[in-house]
Image (cartoon, rainbow over all chains, first blue to last red; front, side, top):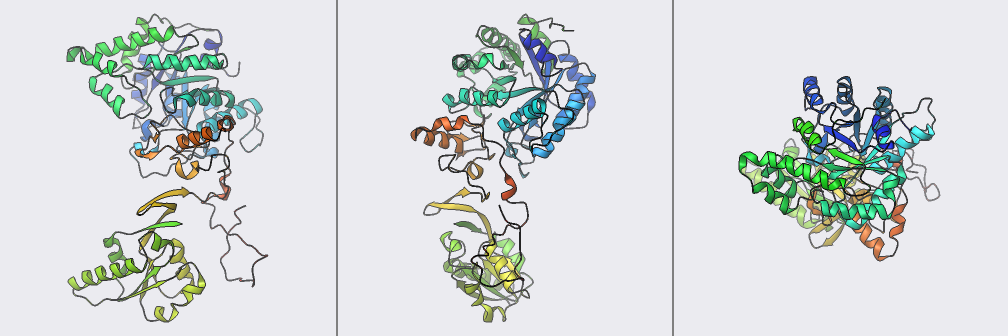
Length: 308
Length: 235
C-alpha cells in the first residue's frame, strides 16, 4: 500500500468505490461541516473536500477535512495551484499528511476571475500534472521539488481530475495518460450527463490500457431544478449537458423535478456501472448532501464494505 | 512592441492638479504605434486638458513635445531646456519612459499619462494582442511558437486544462485557448508526440518579482557607470 487510505484499500481489493463531496462554507461555521458529514457518513468511502471551488473564498480544505475526519469521514483534501506556489503546496502536503488525511486530489483550480475576488493575483506556479508529480516524488522518493530530502514522507493516495467533455476531445485521453505517468493513483471525472460520450472516452482509455494503471471514478450529480440544468448546460465551463436531460426534467410537474433529478442520477449511475474499466463513482451532491444516502441505496451500493 | 493605452482623463487631471506648467511628452516609438502617446495624441490630450482647465477658470499652461524614444538617453537629453521651465512632466511613454525621465531629471515630478499593458503584436490596425511575458527563459521551441506563459490564462505548461471549450478559454468566450492552438499547430507539424513528455515545473527565477532584472554586458560597456542602478542578472 502506498498510503493508509481506506479508499486505496477498497479499490485495490476490487470493490466498486463510492466517493462523495463536501463543500466547506464561506464562513467559520464548523457546525455546517458536521451536519453535512452526517449525511455522508457510512454512505461513501471517502469525501472530497473542495478547495475554494469556483474561486470563492471559503474555509480551507485541510481544516474542513479535519472536522470531517472527527465526524468519522475519510477525507480527500483537494488542492489547487491557483492560490499557492510550490513552497506553500509542499507545506500543505506535509501538513495534511501529518494530520492523518490520506487522500489528495491535485487540481489546477478554477480561474480566479470566476470567484468573488476577481482582482486577485493567480499563482499557477505549477500546473496539476506537475503537482501530481511533486506529491509522488515527496511520497515515493522522499524528495522535495527542489531535490532536498525529507525524513518522513507524506503517504498520500494521489488523485487527479479528468474531463472527458472538454476540448479537444482527441487530446483528453492523452492528457489522462500524462496524469497517470505523473503519478496519479485514482481519477475522478467531470460530472457525466452525456453517458454516450463518456463511454466513447472510456473506450479510448481501455485501448491505451489506462484503466489498469489508474482507478477511474466516474463523476455523477443529481440535478435539483430545470434552472440548474440550464445553468450547467450554458454557463459552467467544461460541462456537457445534453438537451435530452433538460427535456426530461421539463417533462415532469414542477414539484416533481427534484425527484426526477434523483432518478436521472440513479439511471446514469446504473448505465456507468455497465461500462468496463470504471472502478467507482464520485457522487457530487453539492449543497444537496441529504440525498446521498437515498441515491447510494437505490443503486444497490449500500451498505459500504467495511475493511479492517 | 510595448502596448500602451491612455489613462482615464479624470485620473490624468487628478495627477496634474497641483502643477501650473506641464510638459506633455510623447514618445515616437511603441506609444505612437499604440495610438496612445505619439505626436497626435499629445496634441489631442493637450487640447482637451486646456479646455477642461479653461472651464475651471484656467491658469494652467501645457507644453507639447514628442521625442523619438523616451527610453534612450540621447533623446531624453534633448528635452533638458524645456524641463527647466516646467513644474511637471506628463509622460505619454510606457513605464520605461516615465522612469528614464525620472532618473534623468531628479528634481522634476514625472507623471504617467499611459498604462503600460503588455508586450504584444499589432495584429491589425487598432488590434493589439499580448504575445510575451518576458519570463526570461523562452520555451517557444517546445510549444510550437505559441507562448502558454503569456497566452494561457493559467500559464500551464502541460495544458490544456478542463476549461478549454470549442477552442476558447474558460475565462472568456473571446479568448482563444492557447493550448488548443499549440495542439493544432503541433499536429500540423507532425510533432504532437512531443506533448507526451511531462514538462517539469518552470524556473520562474528568471521572471518578474525578483526585483529589477539587469543584463550587464561588460564586453560592450564603455565606461563603468557606478551611478547606474544595478539589479540581478536574469540568468
